[in-house]
Amino acid sequence: MSVSGYGHGAHPGRVRRCNEDSLLVDDRHSLWLIADGMGGHNSGDVASRVAVDYVHDAVVRKGVSLLQAVREAHTIIQIAADQMLGLTGMGSTFVGCRLHGHRYEVVWVGDSRAYLCDGEGLRRLTRDHSYVQQLLDAGQIGEEEAARHPCRHVITQALGAVDLAEVEVERVEGDFCRGQQILLCSDGLTSELDEKTICRLLQDSALDEQGKVDRLISLSLERGGGDNISVIVLSAPDDAPEMGEWDTTQSLTA
Image (cartoon, rainbow, N blue to C red; front, side, top):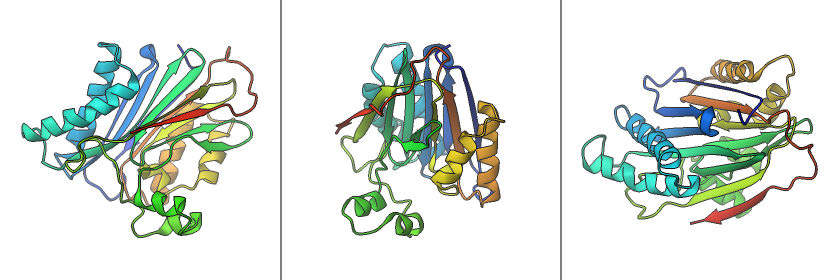
């Protein structure tokens, strides 16, 4: 196993009747995926399932890179909609992690997120493809305003989006060091819990990885549970290198 332990879980939340998230765990191939579908019942759930199934098959069976597999999933979802497997306009955000020895690779589209946590704190590895993120980048709003902005759920990139001939896929990689954890989640978690709360729960030494996942989900439900919630927590292997300076490098790929 390429990790010392992991946990995963999903919940439809307290408001939505359908769970449009899809989660896939393959520890044998060191691959963990979350997709958050959009488009309503019998549509968003189709898009997210197509995304994780296609990416998994492309990476594991065909040997395609994670980055390329996610790019291709965009077209595959559009084809599925054309074939009436879902509804026209269905789409999905996506975040996936693949481990290569003691290196992690994270690929994402939309506002599903990945974080890196250690004894010092929490670092967000992903950058949302969203309208609010664009306002933040332009310096037009601050973090506090962003958290309550009425358009905070408006995303600018999604797999399967009919108005995008190509989707922007971003990738980050770095060393996965001893004592570190990677969190993957849909926005149902981050809409309810701030990063300080997430960090505190991840650093709780009384909980194992599954316990942390369960607690993150339960606390999100206590705070409102307004959306589907999907969570994966990975811990670096015991033989991983010691933590040093942050050495994460990021490549942005349109």
